[in-house]
Amino acid sequence: MATAAQWLEGARPRTLPMAIAPVIVGCAAAFDLGAFKPVNAALAAFVAILLQIGVNYANDYSDGVRGTDADRVGPLRLTGSGAARPEQVKRAAFACFALAMIAGGGLVVLSQAWFLLLVGVGCIAAAWGYTGGRKPYGYLGLGDVFVFVFFGLVATLGTTYTQAGQLSAAAWIGAISTGLIAMALLMANNVRDIPTDREAGKITLAVRLGDTTARITYVMMLAVALLLPVLLVFNHPWVLLVLLLVPACLMPSRLILKGEQRSSLIPVLKQTGLINLGFSVLYGAGLILTTIIVS
Image 1 (spheres, rainbow, N blue to C red):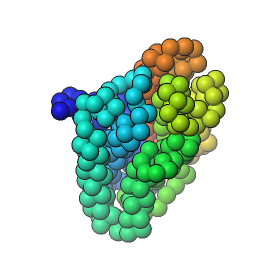
Image 2 (image 1 turned 135 degrees about the vertical axis):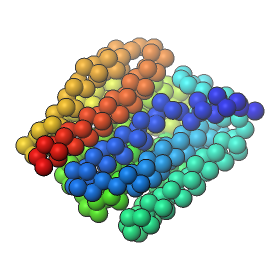
Image 3 (image 1 turned 45 degrees about the horizontal axis):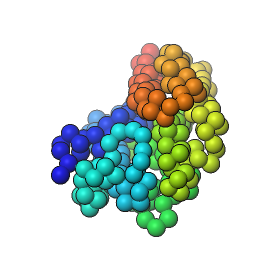
Protein backbone atom coordinates (compact mmCIF):
# COMPACT_ATOMS: atom_id res chain seq x y z
CA MET A 1 0.00 0.00 0.00
CA ALA A 2 1.29 3.43 -0.93
CA THR A 3 2.30 5.75 1.91
CA ALA A 4 0.89 9.23 2.37
CA ALA A 5 4.19 10.64 1.09
CA GLN A 6 3.91 8.52 -2.06
CA TRP A 7 0.34 9.65 -2.67
CA LEU A 8 1.51 13.24 -2.29
CA GLU A 9 4.34 12.67 -4.76
CA GLY A 10 1.89 10.94 -7.10
CA ALA A 11 -0.25 14.07 -7.05
CA ARG A 12 2.75 15.82 -8.65
CA PRO A 13 2.79 19.01 -6.55
CA ARG A 14 5.34 20.54 -8.93
CA THR A 15 2.55 20.88 -11.49
CA LEU A 16 0.19 22.76 -9.16
CA PRO A 17 1.50 26.22 -10.14
CA MET A 18 0.05 25.41 -13.57
CA ALA A 19 -3.39 25.29 -11.91
CA ILE A 20 -2.96 28.29 -9.61
CA ALA A 21 -1.40 30.67 -12.16
CA PRO A 22 -4.44 31.13 -14.44
CA VAL A 23 -6.67 31.78 -11.43
CA ILE A 24 -4.36 34.56 -10.24
CA VAL A 25 -4.35 36.10 -13.72
CA GLY A 26 -8.13 35.78 -14.00
CA CYS A 27 -8.64 37.41 -10.61
CA ALA A 28 -6.36 40.30 -11.53
CA ALA A 29 -8.28 40.80 -14.77
CA ALA A 30 -11.52 40.86 -12.76
CA PHE A 31 -10.00 43.44 -10.40
CA ASP A 32 -9.03 45.49 -13.45
CA LEU A 33 -12.71 45.42 -14.44
CA GLY A 34 -13.71 46.51 -10.93
CA ALA A 35 -15.34 43.20 -10.05
CA PHE A 36 -13.03 41.11 -7.87
CA LYS A 37 -14.98 38.65 -5.66
CA PRO A 38 -12.90 36.73 -3.07
CA VAL A 39 -15.35 33.84 -2.56
CA ASN A 40 -15.65 33.23 -6.29
CA ALA A 41 -11.88 33.43 -6.58
CA ALA A 42 -11.39 30.84 -3.83
CA LEU A 43 -13.86 28.44 -5.47
CA ALA A 44 -12.13 28.86 -8.84
CA ALA A 45 -8.81 28.03 -7.19
CA PHE A 46 -10.27 24.89 -5.59
CA VAL A 47 -11.66 23.75 -8.95
CA ALA A 48 -8.36 24.33 -10.74
CA ILE A 49 -6.23 22.56 -8.11
CA LEU A 50 -8.57 19.58 -7.82
CA LEU A 51 -8.74 19.19 -11.59
CA GLN A 52 -4.95 19.31 -11.84
CA ILE A 53 -4.50 16.63 -9.18
CA GLY A 54 -7.26 14.58 -10.79
CA VAL A 55 -5.56 14.80 -14.18
CA ASN A 56 -2.27 13.74 -12.61
CA TYR A 57 -3.80 10.67 -10.96
CA ALA A 58 -5.76 9.82 -14.11
CA ASN A 59 -2.57 10.06 -16.16
CA ASP A 60 -0.74 7.92 -13.59
CA TYR A 61 -3.46 5.25 -13.79
CA SER A 62 -3.85 5.19 -17.58
CA ASP A 63 -0.14 5.27 -18.42
CA GLY A 64 0.50 2.69 -15.72
CA VAL A 65 -2.00 0.12 -16.99
CA ARG A 66 -0.78 0.64 -20.56
CA GLY A 67 2.83 0.07 -19.53
CA THR A 68 3.98 3.52 -20.63
CA ASP A 69 5.55 4.16 -17.20
CA ALA A 70 7.25 0.77 -16.95
CA ASP A 71 10.69 2.20 -17.71
CA ARG A 72 10.66 5.93 -17.22
CA VAL A 73 12.90 8.71 -15.95
CA GLY A 74 11.46 11.06 -13.37
CA PRO A 75 9.33 11.23 -10.22
CA LEU A 76 7.40 8.29 -8.79
CA ARG A 77 4.34 6.95 -10.60
CA LEU A 78 2.01 5.09 -8.26
CA THR A 79 0.62 2.62 -10.77
CA GLY A 80 3.74 2.06 -12.85
CA SER A 81 5.92 1.48 -9.78
CA GLY A 82 3.40 -0.84 -8.14
CA ALA A 83 3.18 1.39 -5.06
CA ALA A 84 -0.62 1.46 -5.40
CA ARG A 85 -3.14 -0.73 -7.16
CA PRO A 86 -4.51 0.71 -10.42
CA GLU A 87 -8.07 0.85 -9.11
CA GLN A 88 -6.95 2.85 -6.07
CA VAL A 89 -5.32 5.47 -8.29
CA LYS A 90 -8.36 5.55 -10.56
CA ARG A 91 -10.66 6.12 -7.58
CA ALA A 92 -8.41 8.93 -6.36
CA ALA A 93 -8.66 10.61 -9.76
CA PHE A 94 -12.46 10.43 -9.83
CA ALA A 95 -12.69 11.61 -6.22
CA CYS A 96 -10.79 14.75 -7.24
CA PHE A 97 -13.05 15.23 -10.25
CA ALA A 98 -16.14 14.87 -8.06
CA LEU A 99 -14.89 17.45 -5.56
CA ALA A 100 -14.02 19.79 -8.44
CA MET A 101 -17.57 19.46 -9.78
CA ILE A 102 -19.02 20.30 -6.35
CA ALA A 103 -16.84 23.41 -6.01
CA GLY A 104 -17.56 24.32 -9.62
CA GLY A 105 -21.29 23.94 -9.04
CA GLY A 106 -21.07 26.39 -6.17
CA LEU A 107 -19.18 28.84 -8.38
CA VAL A 108 -21.83 28.57 -11.10
CA VAL A 109 -24.61 29.23 -8.60
CA LEU A 110 -22.86 32.32 -7.23
CA SER A 111 -22.04 33.72 -10.66
CA GLN A 112 -25.30 32.60 -12.34
CA ALA A 113 -23.17 31.61 -15.36
CA TRP A 114 -25.14 28.43 -16.00
CA PHE A 115 -23.48 27.65 -19.33
CA LEU A 116 -20.32 26.92 -17.38
CA LEU A 117 -21.91 23.68 -16.19
CA LEU A 118 -21.35 22.36 -19.70
CA VAL A 119 -17.80 23.71 -19.63
CA GLY A 120 -17.25 21.84 -16.37
CA VAL A 121 -18.47 18.58 -17.86
CA GLY A 122 -16.16 19.18 -20.82
CA CYS A 123 -13.24 19.74 -18.45
CA ILE A 124 -13.83 16.41 -16.70
CA ALA A 125 -14.23 14.55 -20.00
CA ALA A 126 -11.08 16.14 -21.39
CA ALA A 127 -9.14 15.43 -18.19
CA TRP A 128 -9.98 11.72 -18.35
CA GLY A 129 -9.64 11.46 -22.12
CA TYR A 130 -6.09 12.85 -22.07
CA THR A 131 -4.60 9.41 -21.43
CA GLY A 132 -7.73 7.40 -20.56
CA GLY A 133 -10.30 5.61 -22.67
CA ARG A 134 -9.84 3.62 -25.85
CA LYS A 135 -8.35 6.43 -27.92
CA PRO A 136 -6.63 8.89 -25.57
CA TYR A 137 -5.84 12.11 -27.39
CA GLY A 138 -2.65 12.56 -25.35
CA TYR A 139 -1.26 9.64 -27.36
CA LEU A 140 -2.06 11.47 -30.60
CA GLY A 141 -0.07 14.64 -29.92
CA LEU A 142 -3.11 16.64 -28.79
CA GLY A 143 -2.29 16.86 -25.08
CA ASP A 144 -0.66 20.24 -25.59
CA VAL A 145 -3.90 21.59 -27.07
CA PHE A 146 -5.77 20.34 -23.98
CA VAL A 147 -3.32 22.09 -21.65
CA PHE A 148 -3.51 25.37 -23.57
CA VAL A 149 -7.30 25.38 -23.77
CA PHE A 150 -8.16 24.22 -20.25
CA PHE A 151 -5.18 25.40 -18.15
CA GLY A 152 -4.85 28.60 -20.14
CA LEU A 153 -8.04 29.89 -21.73
CA VAL A 154 -10.78 28.14 -19.74
CA ALA A 155 -9.20 28.51 -16.29
CA THR A 156 -8.24 32.16 -16.75
CA LEU A 157 -11.27 33.41 -18.63
CA GLY A 158 -13.63 31.34 -16.50
CA THR A 159 -12.18 32.90 -13.35
CA THR A 160 -12.64 36.40 -14.76
CA TYR A 161 -16.14 35.78 -16.10
CA THR A 162 -17.48 34.27 -12.87
CA GLN A 163 -16.52 37.48 -11.09
CA ALA A 164 -16.99 40.23 -13.67
CA GLY A 165 -19.58 38.74 -16.01
CA GLN A 166 -17.46 39.91 -18.93
CA LEU A 167 -13.99 39.54 -20.44
CA SER A 168 -11.30 42.00 -21.45
CA ALA A 169 -8.19 42.20 -23.62
CA ALA A 170 -6.10 41.88 -20.45
CA ALA A 171 -7.89 38.65 -19.55
CA TRP A 172 -7.34 37.20 -23.04
CA ILE A 173 -3.64 38.15 -23.18
CA GLY A 174 -3.06 36.72 -19.72
CA ALA A 175 -4.93 33.53 -20.62
CA ILE A 176 -2.88 32.99 -23.78
CA SER A 177 0.42 33.67 -22.02
CA THR A 178 -0.20 31.41 -19.04
CA GLY A 179 -1.51 28.75 -21.42
CA LEU A 180 1.73 28.91 -23.42
CA ILE A 181 3.84 28.52 -20.27
CA ALA A 182 1.71 25.54 -19.23
CA MET A 183 2.30 24.06 -22.68
CA ALA A 184 6.03 24.65 -22.23
CA LEU A 185 5.92 22.66 -18.98
CA LEU A 186 4.23 19.75 -20.72
CA MET A 187 6.70 20.01 -23.60
CA ALA A 188 9.63 19.76 -21.18
CA ASN A 189 8.04 16.70 -19.58
CA ASN A 190 7.47 15.08 -22.96
CA VAL A 191 10.95 15.87 -24.27
CA ARG A 192 12.31 13.97 -21.28
CA ASP A 193 10.03 11.03 -22.08
CA ILE A 194 10.53 10.88 -25.87
CA PRO A 195 12.38 7.51 -25.89
CA THR A 196 9.93 5.70 -23.58
CA ASP A 197 6.86 7.33 -25.12
CA ARG A 198 7.96 6.34 -28.62
CA GLU A 199 8.45 2.74 -27.52
CA ALA A 200 5.02 2.66 -25.85
CA GLY A 201 3.29 4.16 -28.89
CA LYS A 202 2.50 7.43 -27.11
CA ILE A 203 2.89 9.94 -29.93
CA THR A 204 3.08 13.23 -28.06
CA LEU A 205 3.74 16.53 -29.80
CA ALA A 206 7.38 16.24 -28.67
CA VAL A 207 7.64 12.84 -30.37
CA ARG A 208 6.04 14.25 -33.53
CA LEU A 209 8.33 17.28 -33.64
CA GLY A 210 11.47 15.35 -32.83
CA ASP A 211 13.94 16.00 -30.03
CA THR A 212 15.68 19.12 -31.38
CA THR A 213 12.58 20.94 -32.64
CA ALA A 214 10.66 20.13 -29.46
CA ARG A 215 13.41 21.69 -27.36
CA ILE A 216 13.41 24.85 -29.45
CA THR A 217 9.61 24.99 -29.26
CA TYR A 218 9.83 25.06 -25.46
CA VAL A 219 12.01 28.19 -25.58
CA MET A 220 9.76 29.86 -28.14
CA MET A 221 6.68 29.25 -25.98
CA LEU A 222 8.31 31.02 -23.03
CA ALA A 223 9.48 33.89 -25.22
CA VAL A 224 6.06 34.53 -26.77
CA ALA A 225 4.36 34.27 -23.36
CA LEU A 226 6.57 37.02 -21.93
CA LEU A 227 6.30 39.28 -24.97
CA LEU A 228 2.52 39.17 -25.46
CA PRO A 229 1.74 41.52 -22.52
CA VAL A 230 3.69 44.25 -24.35
CA LEU A 231 0.55 44.62 -26.49
CA LEU A 232 -1.19 46.10 -23.44
CA VAL A 233 1.54 48.57 -22.50
CA PHE A 234 -0.33 51.72 -23.60
CA ASN A 235 -3.26 51.13 -21.25
CA HIS A 236 -1.51 48.90 -18.70
CA PRO A 237 2.16 49.99 -18.57
CA TRP A 238 2.86 48.07 -15.36
CA VAL A 239 2.43 44.72 -17.12
CA LEU A 240 6.03 45.19 -18.26
CA LEU A 241 6.87 43.77 -14.83
CA VAL A 242 6.64 40.34 -16.47
CA LEU A 243 9.93 41.07 -18.25
CA LEU A 244 11.64 40.65 -14.87
CA LEU A 245 11.18 36.93 -15.52
CA VAL A 246 13.60 36.90 -18.45
CA PRO A 247 16.62 35.95 -16.27
CA ALA A 248 14.56 33.17 -14.62
CA CYS A 249 13.85 31.71 -18.07
CA LEU A 250 17.50 31.44 -19.03
CA MET A 251 18.42 28.45 -16.86
CA PRO A 252 15.56 26.11 -17.91
CA SER A 253 16.02 27.20 -21.52
CA ARG A 254 19.70 26.33 -21.35
CA LEU A 255 18.93 22.98 -19.72
CA ILE A 256 16.30 22.06 -22.30
CA LEU A 257 18.56 23.03 -25.19
CA LYS A 258 21.78 21.48 -23.90
CA GLY A 259 20.72 18.67 -21.54
CA GLU A 260 21.78 15.36 -23.06
CA GLN A 261 20.78 13.11 -20.16
CA ARG A 262 17.01 12.79 -19.80
CA SER A 263 17.33 13.01 -16.03
CA SER A 264 18.94 16.45 -16.38
CA LEU A 265 15.61 17.78 -17.67
CA ILE A 266 13.71 16.96 -14.47
CA PRO A 267 14.50 20.33 -12.79
CA VAL A 268 13.05 22.12 -15.83
CA LEU A 269 9.55 21.01 -14.78
CA LYS A 270 9.76 22.71 -11.39
CA GLN A 271 11.44 25.78 -12.87
CA THR A 272 8.78 26.16 -15.56
CA GLY A 273 6.01 25.78 -13.01
CA LEU A 274 7.57 28.54 -10.94
CA ILE A 275 7.91 30.71 -14.04
CA ASN A 276 4.18 30.32 -14.65
CA LEU A 277 3.46 31.25 -11.05
CA GLY A 278 5.88 34.19 -11.28
CA PHE A 279 4.26 35.36 -14.50
CA SER A 280 0.80 35.28 -12.94
CA VAL A 281 1.96 37.29 -9.91
CA LEU A 282 3.84 39.92 -11.93
CA TYR A 283 1.18 40.19 -14.63
CA GLY A 284 -1.53 40.38 -11.99
CA ALA A 285 0.43 43.01 -10.06
CA GLY A 286 0.80 45.00 -13.27
CA LEU A 287 -2.96 45.03 -13.84
CA ILE A 288 -3.73 45.88 -10.23
CA LEU A 289 -1.12 48.65 -10.01
CA THR A 290 -2.39 50.21 -13.21
CA THR A 291 -5.97 50.16 -11.90
CA ILE A 292 -4.98 51.68 -8.55
CA ILE A 293 -2.74 54.37 -10.01
CA VAL A 294 -5.15 55.39 -12.76
CA SER A 295 -8.10 55.55 -10.36
